[in-house]
Amino acid sequence: MLVAEELAEPAADPHDFRVDLDKNSNRSVFIAEQAADYLPPDDWHQPKVQKVLGPAEFPVNKSLRQLLSHLCRNPAFATQGQTIRILADSGRDILSGALQDLLVNVSQIAPGDVGELRIFWGRIHNVNERDETLWLNMGNYQSEPSIVVEDELKTELLSYFRLSEAADLSGADFILVGHCGQSAQHKYVLRFAFPKYIAFRRCRVVEKTAIDANTSGESTASQDPVLVVPKKTLSVVVGCFKLDKL
Image (cartoon, rainbow, N blue to C red; front, side, top):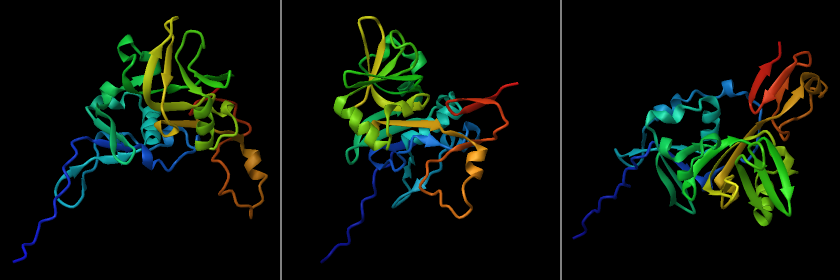
């Protein structure tokens, strides 16, 4: 006699958010919106429950880029007790736990973070290339933290994010999953394994007259997004925050 077998339900994932590094479809660095135009961080604080093949609760899927956008909007949003699970290589666990414990702003790196896998985030202030190595610096290259990207990984990074030159990353906000080392001069150095372990966001600014110059029938679908600033408005754009000068 044939006995109908019940389909096994997948085990519930207790984490609030799930980041699959293999499913990152947005590889653009440039954005058009200011930070205030992004969705409120409530989408992270109170995740919706997704039902999959049964009553088990599953985490909301997010990307590193979305996480970075929320951090730029509200640097303190990870203090709500959220948990996160990061996967890659067809489901292999990379990192999981309380988001507040894993997330480190580069200005707050401590000796306890050295050698540990963490989620680091901050802003790149300047870019240097030396001996085929790319240095993405958070400030003074001699004393403040830097991301080091060596030779082959540098080529892969530029290709992955469709960048013509590394200088395009100057002024960009970033988030990465990786390790922190420390030099003999006590400078913190960040490293990551693959381009999918990092994400960037940077505003591109053009004068409004440059947009008006386009013909009405010209398609702009393939162009990079831009942040439009009126020509007569004197402003300073810092990362993705625009400050008007008085």
